[in-house]
Amino acid sequence: MTYIGRFAPSPTGHLHLGSLITALGSWLDARANHGQWLLRIEDVDLPRTQPGAASHIMATLEACALHWDGEVLVQSTRSARYAQACAQLTSLGLTYPCTCSRREIADTALGRSPDGAQVYPGTCRAGSAHQRAAHAVRIRTNSHPIEFLDRLQGLQTQCVEHAVGDFVLQRADGLTTYQLAVVVDDADQGVTDIVRGADLQDSTARQIYLQHCLGFSTPRYLHLPIAVNASGEKLSKQTRAAAVGPNDLPAAFAALAHPLPDALGHASAKEQLAWGLAHWNPARLPRGRTLAA
Ligand code: GLU
Ligand code: ZN
Image 1: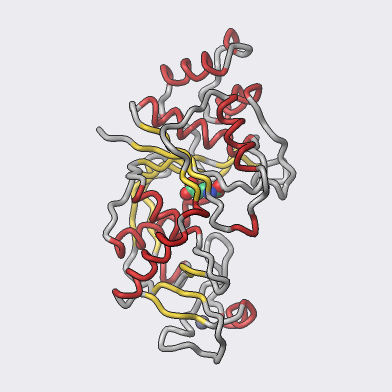
Image 2: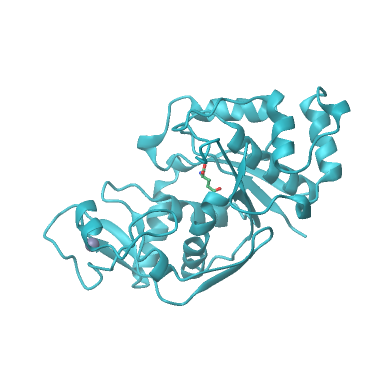
């Protein structure tokens, strides 16, 4: 079996326990399957990128002996490739310019999508509704339900048109969105297996829809529950989650329901990972969207 996995952090801050759990889970799954494990720095949203965060993340992964294969792919170097993919979708008649402001969308939205965004009602589908120069590019969605079998969370179904609406590929400021960039990158890197946080589970149908439109194959998916703090918030820079290092590997193993034996509690990261490889069993992973960390 060919297995190419990846870890794709956004360099918006340091690695925290939540991102370490995801990194460890995807690394173990890739290595236990004799697969490759690629690293991609997802800095496509440049305004949210923090200087130094990417190198800090890489140093932390190295210190935890979570070594990756090959060159690191950096999204901010790939805008020409993303523009080409967007143009391909346009040539298929699948995109349209949208001049709606945030406010106009909020006023007309058909409720909220599972990830909290406003469901776009398709205002500009038949032509821009307003005379404005700056415009986003949206993709036409349809009511055909997208199904995928998540290796941990089971069968997932979403009708993208109802759940999210026609979504943005390129923002009015010219930046490519995460949804398009991730699909193009996973395809270009030959990724066969995505192990990532369940906060992205509701994005998966959008990504599969884009894979279909662009003629890419669909990888296997496994969405790990994400670590939340005592108030139920996702660990992140916003919730002031602490930076982690090799001493946090035991907590990450425990969160994945693969607790290290006591004798290995103070072993080197390399020895802990070797134990993890020998004992990796995805059937033991906790199901659900969140876990208290
Ligand atoms: N860059 C995303 C994040 O840090 C992960 C994207 C993905 O794994 O598809 O949340
Ligand atoms: Zn619009």
